[in-house]
Image (cartoon, rainbow, N blue to C red; front, top):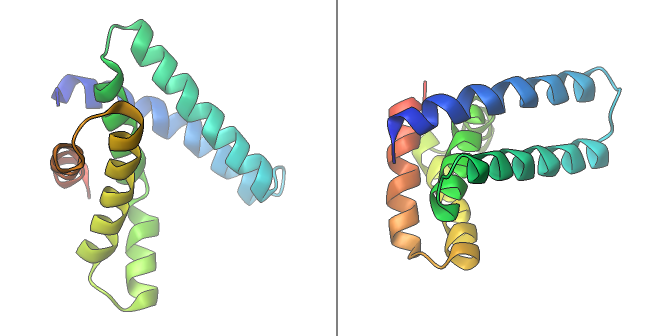
Length: 125
C-alpha cells in the first residue's frame, strides 16, 4: 500500500469523522443517524479515491485500514474492558475488515489481512 495514499486518506477520514462524532456526542445525532452518516462518509471517500484513479480494492483497503487506525482509542478501551490483549481486539477488527474486502472485491482474505495489518501497525499510536 502506498504510504502517500494513507497520508491522504487518514486526514480526510479523521476530519469528517470527528465532526460526526462531535454531533453524536452533543446529542445532535442519534445512533442510527450516526451510523447512516458514517456509511455515507465511507462511500464518499471511496468514490473520491476512485475518481483519483485508485483501484477499487486498494481504495477499500485504505479506507478500512484508516477506520481501524482512527478507532485505536476505542479498540484499546474494548481490550481493557474485556481484559484481553489489544492485539486480539485489533486482529478481530482486521479480520472482519479483510473478510468484507475479500467478499466484495474478490481479493484473497489473507492478502487483505496482511495489507490492513501492515497499515494499522505503521500508523497506530
